[in-house]
Length: 198
Image (cartoon, rainbow, N blue to C red; front, side):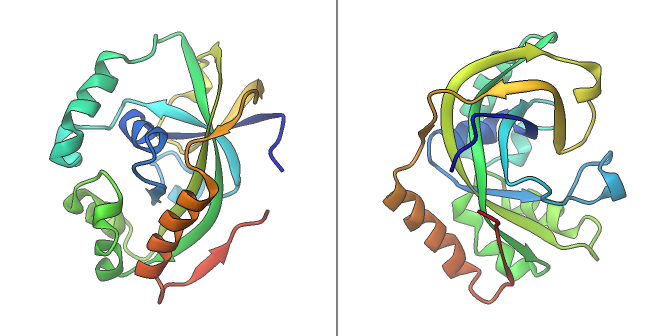
């Protein structure tokens, strides 16, 4: 059951948010930001709004077919004093992996270059890379003040106020989302699956 509001946001590149909105991918690859607690990424929330970020996305890190979309997100960057949330997401499954060969199987299922995906994997090599399968819903946009505590290289952002979740509509129909999720899991069949609480 979907909630009526949330105070949790997950930062992700604006161009990735666009790919998620278009139903072009359902995976996120996370290792953690430099300001994370313990310097590694943990999925401590399974429902959240997407917080589009612009700080680290660079043309050299995304595949050629996403270059125009990335430039467009930069041109349409949000004002510095507020943030608008337009998408709510649920983490439906989590996979931890350590092997580059298994990561490479996902190359056609995301917008990042293979070199950048591998860079994420090999940063802090003793820690696994988390592959998140997320189901995204469009929502009635909500704009809130951009507070200083939201800044920095961190994944999870506790918001200072409730964000109402009105007009939630899934980007992908049930059958299409399941098809894409099955495609991910087939490529990672030998990898440990951590079911997400429902």
